[in-house]
Length: 296
Image (cartoon, rainbow, N blue to C red; front, top):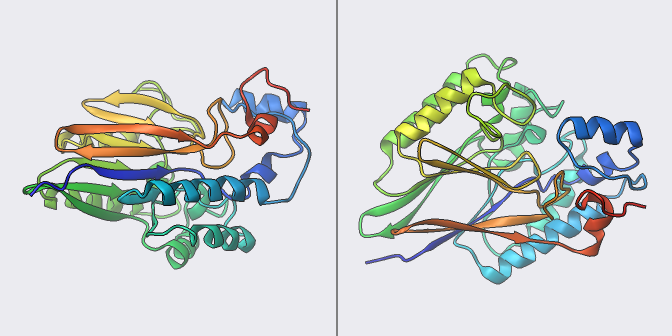
């Protein structure tokens, strides 16, 4: 019997505390951010988590209204794992959701320096969010089954403080793909493999090419149809050998011209489609709006 369309809600970069991190930036900071591809505007210094929490609360309340079948947050739940108040605030709002939330780690969740994973940071993540990778399944129709792999892309990006972590993650992905039931496959990870071109140089926003290409080729060879990413705090789309690679803007603080929001993916026997749900409000215009917008 047909299951019908499965709706997957994908959220990225809730990142409680991010707005405060970017607050109080001066002109030299703004120029430095711009050189890294971030559209940040000047706004007063604050230590408050309220703005981030308001965006997350709006997202959770919207999820409760639309009632997706599955909900996944693709990393950077908090800005700094050394600040327990950020995790506590995150969980308080997450508890409003009337269903389970599933997680894939981002660099801010699994590294004390928000870049390079360590064993201690991985232990922190496991104790707060669960395993660093996981698999979700749901019937589509007949014997067809949706498979969702939640991948730890932080060790694909910077594995050098955890010897063997990259190889272990790749082996896990390969085993999960080999053992899945027939049907559509979606992969969730925090880092986009590349921004514009599969052969581009490595920078903060993509994966190193020596690990990027084996990862992409593994997914393409297995017929993965969709790769959902975050990390860049903006919306973008590229393709690689049949894989649609979609980067979704932040639930929290934006670094591009897209408003905060999340994505709903619809998976059916006939194919996969997705829609971005913005959480725009006037407050966003004051701190992260499009270039040329007022900031003071």
